[in-house]
Amino acid sequence: MTITKKHIVKYIPYIVVVLAVGVVAWWFLYNPVKSLSMAVPGMDNRTVDSSRALEIVNIGEFFSIGGDVESVPGTRWPRFRGADLDNISKERIPLIDSWEPSGPDILWTLELGEGHAAPAIYDGLIYLLDYDEVRKQDALRCLSLETGEELWRRSYRVHLKRNHGLSRTIPAVTEQYVVTIGPRCQVMCVDRKSGDFLWGIDLEKEFGTEIPFWYTGQCPLIVDDTAIIAVGGSSLMIGVDCKTGNIAWKTPNPNSWKMSHASVMPMQFKGKKMYIYPAVGGVCGISAEGADQGKILWESLDFSPTVVAPSPVILDQGKIFLTAGYGYGGVVMQVNERNGKFSAEISQKYKPSKGLASEQQTPIYSNGHLFGIMPKDAGGLRNEFVCFHPDDCMEVVMRSGKTDRFGMGPYIIADDKFFILNDDGEMTIAKLSTNRFTVLDRAQIIDGQDSWGPIAITGGYLLMRDSKQLICINIKAD
Image (cartoon, rainbow, N blue to C red):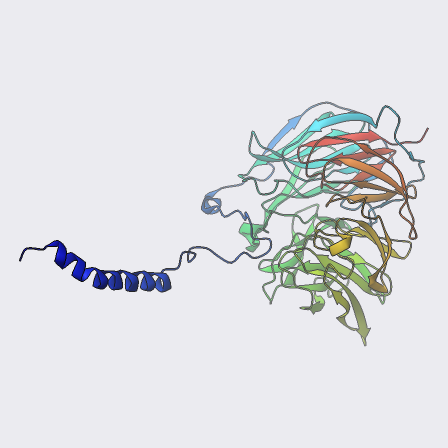
């Protein structure tokens, strides 16, 4: 049969119907996002590297020696948040109220691998766990506080991919030991003075630890020459003898909680010492002494954000302040004891637009009040420096105001003053007060970005960093 123009015109309606049915069927059956996963807070840019299981990491394998300097006794900021874990310098050295007209007295600047890791200081020596991007190594660098000169370096090769920065943690330092946790959960212990390697533990391989979203943010803790590490794998927490590397005790992990970015904080309540840790899954108190050392004393599922970066803030009378970002907000938790049994309950819980919260930095508890920088989702208080009383963390007592916002930068108290760093490297000096935010001076220290690493102050020296530089400033008053 010969197909004519007349036949084509006749069948056009049928062809259109068939095509329409096909399009509708395709619309319902085809899923254009089936290969995508739900966007869970904190899951962005999470590193998944199948080659990791085959990589052999020889912790502490490399060592190099640089210069040699005399120690400066008494200049100490020996761990995350300082000796008392409160981010408050107790030294009686008078510090500046304002910057010189010529600008800050910058003593030295040091290039670093990308990240937010901050220094610990012990008797004039700086200990910093950096990442050497050229050699692909975690590197514990021992530096001179006065000059920034590298004295020795203990390192090991480990592969990392950029993930909102690389290094994040602060070593724990005592007279004898330095303990570090690397981005991929390698724990290393060395002799503080010589840098001699003592032992190492790969938490991922030995305990099945799942590396957190943006690599490890937990800073180690040393108590009575025992390294305290929240594992979040086959064990929830472990104590390691710093001298031998032997596991002194293990805490079971029956709920399969995972490692968060927060650090372990010690607490004493009703005569009992315990370690407080907010894991991914819940928060708990673990015995820190006696025959039941390592035992879970209490646990709560009432604080279980997907991502936890700020560490617990230990308040008075058994109270704990906990907070997390990504819209979670904050809680005040009350620990209770009855007949030797411990429990915990939430006394206040709210969203970030309703009360004190933090996305990254851990708030400071001073003079009976909590100080912090509000997250970006805190409504009108976003990124403001604020003060709350822990009896009611939904009633702001003091705020910096709309014209003084600080991003996610760190802050510290020293010489009755706040030193507050914003994301872009501007440092503000303000009066320590619970009534009014009074700026004494501010200066642009560095034209960098992501200045999120915690600040350290000792001996009139202030150490700060942006994503790629460490800076030492003289802040001693004349």
